[in-house]
View 1: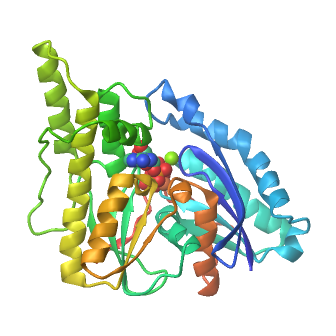
View 2 (view 1 turned 90 degrees about the horizontal axis):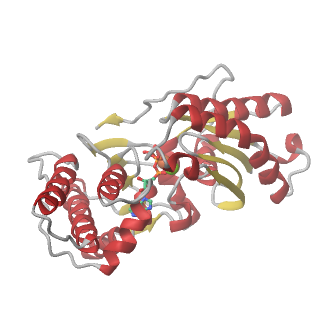
Length: 335
Ligand code: ATP
Ligand code: MG
Ligand code: FE
């Protein structure tokens, strides 16, 4: 089974060929981060134009690298992300996928981007069920219950900012470029977590809240500024990162106790964070849970993870018509 997959929900234009849902034959990712950095975030119009410029090139490269010369004969299906994301960005990958499927007479599979992030774990090992997924990205922070393969229900979600968004906003306060997550991690590694930034405890739910944490970092920096005191940015990054990781672990642990999964999954751009990985590894050990983390190289947006998720739909016979539209606010339902 070979699936050609497309991803274009945010600022990465990507095409990949995935074999049997867990083997990458090619995964071409064209990032447009540099174009957005001077604006401090993604500019939707700029993003769509980039996707349009790059989509054919990444498709050609993905097919070439996977030695696909006769798509109709070699491929089993074509897949694309249809949400969540920016509508103008999603449209480019979705149109490319549907068009490719139509031209070559192949079935089409629409993929939820978040299911894609979680499916990046499939490149490491098969999942055992029931599982709980910790999905931490630039736009989402969710605890998801997976009673069985390809089934996702929201246990908890963020009430305001996503974890990655918090990293990016605090990074901006510290003068970093967008996206700031990786650089924040590098600064944190050089600093001491010696500043207390309080985390939200959202009583009796498994929901997250990161905007208060962001505000307290902002207050800390402003306060020091007013007093003309020097701040140690590395210490701020370390203290902030510690608080984010603690907040994620606190809710994950509470959910483990209630739902008792046999397996944990970690996915999304923030899954690349080493402090979070270490903490989740420790948590899994404590509760004797199997753990699969998205490989760091596949934590951010890429089409291979979309191909992995599409394979699960393929097995379940879940195909989509070519009249399918984007769903920018697509999400799972609450448990
Ligand atoms: P979504 O998946 O919710 O639609 P997105 O696709 O824009 O949003 P991703 O590409 O999955 O988000 O993740 C990007 C986010 O991950 C950014 O906010 C970035 O700062 C963050 N990130 C990347 N690497 C790290 C890291 N090492 N530590 C912390 N955050 C990180
Ligand atoms: Mg991104
Ligand atoms: Fe993403």
